Amino acid sequence: MNRVLAATAIDAARSGARRGMPGAFAARYIAAVVVFSLAYPAIAALLRFAIGEDANAGALLADFSYCLAVGFGAILGAAAAEAVSRNRFLPGVQLAIAVLAAGVAGMLLIELSISALVLPLGLSTDKLDPEFSMRRLAKHFAGAASWSVIIVALYMTIEGSRRAARDLHAARLAALAAQHDLYVGELRTTQARVDPDFLFAALLDVDRDYAHGVDAGQASLDALIRFLRAALPGDGSTNSTVAREQELCEAYLAVARRRFALPLEIAFDIEPGVREAPMPAMLLLPLVRWTIADCSVRILRIRVRSVPAGVELAVESSGGGGDDGCGAQALAELHQRLAVLYPGSARLRTETHRGGRRATLAIPGA
Image 1: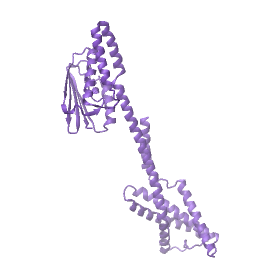
Image 2: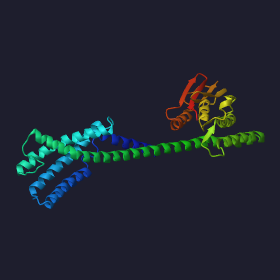
Image 3: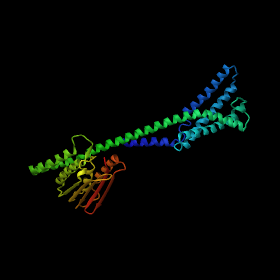
Image 4: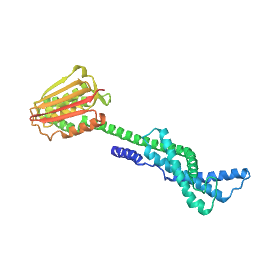
């Protein structure tokens, strides 16, 4: 689900970026230009009738062609100017460029309407001068540009609102994807704190130890209960502290030593000032699991100290086989959790040397 949401958000953002001339030939703009081209001649004819002037069909048709040329010129000029100047100039400069482009486009379309409609049909109107001259071009440019100020402003307002709606929709989808990733990460963290396979194997070990003796069985059971208490804190918080994560690791290692009969020597070096420092749960234990994954290490050193950027966790094992293939799952789950909690700001370094491993994790402070 999170991948679908993220992909949808990215596609929405890219679709908005690909639209260099957004909606220029969309039905809504064609309909708006046609309505404008019908309304203006009709209103002009009513005014002529009201003041006693004659309104013939030729003048109405010429006015209609003029309005079509101005309307489509304004839309085309605004769309072309927006494709060139958007995100490059201030809104006022974009509006000026769009009006100039719309004036030029409208002038050219008016000239086309004169050549294709007015002159062949013998129409005459004060807006469409049949004699070509620079004065006619200037007149048509001024008329188209003056109408374009209103049309371009409406166009830019509508398109700006549509882009804002698309961007908001993409941002909401991205936020939902991030929230879903966080929920999945927390769910996996809860599951990882009490690994079902580890728990069932530990229960079998308890049963086996009880078969050998009450004292051995009770010791295994006590170690398992301690681990469960550390793994399932009662306050329901998704955050933790350095001290709590140390207790979780100690409880886990107590069970692991009995399970795998590890003669493991454990040394914790926790700075007193960071013991109560807040940190996300399940960052230290995966490092421990990775360093002792081959079940043959003899010495484990865990160090937590404060650094200028936050907290540094260092786990090092020695005396083992150094098998690179062990513990890959624990490390992969840790990478996923860090990507959710600290995208790009956490630093994890791992190295496998002869006879042991070392992992160092630096996380930002709370």
